Length: 391
Ligand code: SF4
Image (cartoon, rainbow, N blue to C red; front, side, top):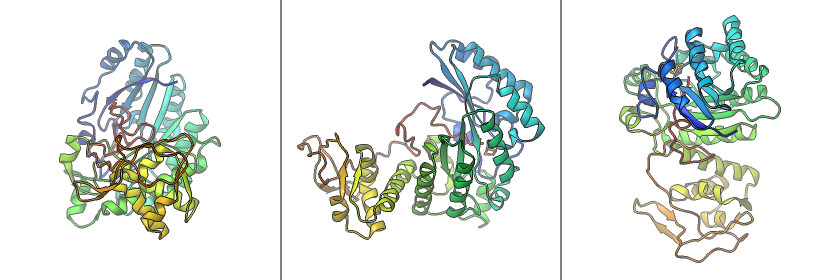
């Protein structure tokens, strides 16, 4: 059931210690529903007036790590919401391990739970240690298995560009988690590139030369490969990149920041996917996927050209739109930013369906603050799903 989301942000709620990269206050400051003091009473009042079933979301910390009686009070708030409502929250995987984790799992079974979002930035012991996480890979896997066996829907929140992390180790982690997903797949997948936020331990590590963030280009390559791996293995990718906000922008000291990182990563994923499926084309794609190749000055076309060794013109000739896709196109031009731009225009005649595209989509350097992207709806701004909520 699709429900309207009402999100409450409780920065670092229940967190036993601070992961080196984390400052939830910065990440959620501009988000809808954020407050340093979200009380159960406030939540109850917030949902009781909803005229339709809602998804009550608790993000920004480790929900199940807080005091059990307080957690239960928050969960009870859903009883004040219209029938059919559910609760979604982010939590540290270790919260569901051991006897306490079993107790919490049993409590959760009494509530309508939408999704349990597990912060699994990495499963690599070297990375977890460098990030000062107090979970380990086995703990995270055991927790996910316990929740899976109890019938809960899980979302995993993974990260790239972390200290001591390599692209290969992220791919390994995706495969490990895919291996414990139910056979039908479908766990939600969020991917966040690590940024150096001012005032965090990671910034100190960066200044001491102990952490060198990857260049943007490299980070996009890694993210694209990870997304492709995740999708191929049955994850449902719902978010890539942090939610862009003024607060976030002001707080970044270093790292692979781009206001539309998610779109760049999706473009990389698309180019990789096509080149692997058919090294020289032809490629039949939907209109939606076409925009992943054509956005940002035709970034995906350039990348496909690099990956295949073909000229851009030859790449274009090998791309065909799937059935029922009609487009209006203009000719290639140079954008105001100097990047080559290939633009469709409503002033031009419609293209025939099923023939190679001579021009590709909107040169879409929107710069509208979409650092992340949600593949199901790339430009959503509902504040809930767009919020960074890793734990
Ligand atoms: S990353 Fe998650 S677990 Fe770590 S300090 Fe931040 S909110 Fe807490």
